[in-house]
Each structure stands twice: as C-alpha cells, then as structure tokens.
Image (cartoon, rainbow, N blue to C red):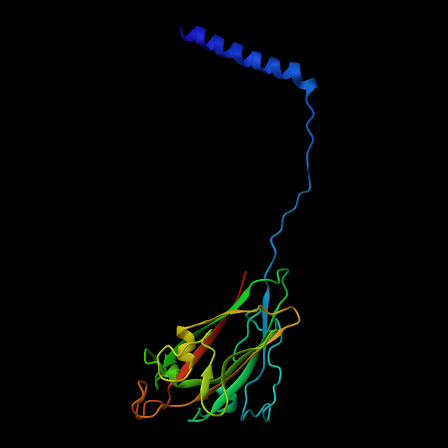
Length: 237
C-alpha cells in the first residue's frame, strides 16, 4: 500500500509541474523596483552661554558663547551652563543668583511636534554625600523664558511678587514660590519646537533660603550643600 501511495504522489507532482510549463506562455510578470522609504528625522542640537553675574570671564551681565552647536564632547548636548564655580568660586550666599541660556535648534527634516523639558536634581550634603533632603527647594526660579514664536514666560516676576504660568510648572510643594524642586516634580511640556534658525531658554536661579516656619526651613544646614541640576530637552513628534 505504501508503494502505491508514493507512486500517486509522484504522479501528482509531475502533473503539477507539467501544468506550469503548459501555461507559462500565458503570463506576464513585471516588477516595481527602487522603492525607497525613509522616516523623517528629529535632530535637536544645543548650545549655551557662560553664566553671570560675578563671572571673571564675562565681567558683567553680558552673554558670551560657551559651547556652540555640536561642540560638546557629549555630542549635541552641553554642560556647565549654570555653573556657580565661575561666578562664586567660594560658594553662593543668600541672594546670589546665576543666569544663563541654552540655545536650541532642530536640524532634522520634521518640523512638527512639541518640546518637553524635564528637570532632574541631585542634592549633596556638606560632605558631598547624596541626600534626600530637597535642598533644590531653596533654588528659586526668578524667571524662566522660552524665546521662540511665540515667546513663553514660564516663570516670571513683576517686582511685586512671584508669578508663574501654571500651564507649565506648578507650585507643587505649596511653599508659595517656584523652585528647581517644583520643576523636577512637574516638567515643562508642550512648547513649540525650535526651528532650524534656533530658539533660546533663559533662566535665572536665586539661592533664597526660606524663613522660619517654611516647610524647608533649617537654621544652619545650607553650608556646603549643593544641587546638581540636569535638564532634559525632548523633541517629540
């Protein structure tokens, strides 16, 4: 029985091949070649300026270029934009502030989407050990402006008190002011993406220890403490 089945199978295969040969002259197959699909790109590049005031390099409230687009060893990122060591080599004191700028541009092919900016802080005690105490809550954002079209005042003051745009950063801890700590808890999102011609983020941060009764008040626990801030700029489609 096995021999019969094997023979039948062979016959069917041969018959099939014969059918292909028989109708080969009645077919016409063409090809569409060279089809090329490429995704659009988002390519965000950063540049920055040296911080001021009391900066011996700049000598005053003027912005001088630090790292241009693509000049940083990390690629398109920048570092040391708000760096107290240039203006306050011995450390900041109450009322001391740093202002600087980050320049942004998108050199990719996609121009739509939005820009998000997240803030991540690391706090250290007087012995340079990491601490969970939110010392970044005494780094008050005096103003934070995104210069693009249109200009967006994310945090600002008018001389009579602090104001902020709650569309972007809320007073999350409820202490009546906007700090780097608040920014970490509530990132900025939904900004217009920077064009190829560039946009700018300008921020001034003031070391402002709170008074007694404030949730982050401490009598003498700021000496030697430090905050390392990292801003993450995300260009989203």
